[in-house]
Length: 59
Image (cartoon, one colour):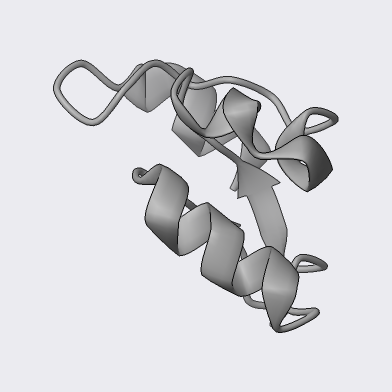
């Protein structure tokens, strides 16, 4: 089974992208969109109000 990651914090998204570990990343929050390399991922809400249905679809 392939591992998939939904990042709920811009700092985590930045670290994953900086480490080159962005391949399992399938979704980010609206705040993560400011991280240049995360702009192509679906936005799933934010860390306070994440859309669980969207997370289930991408995961």
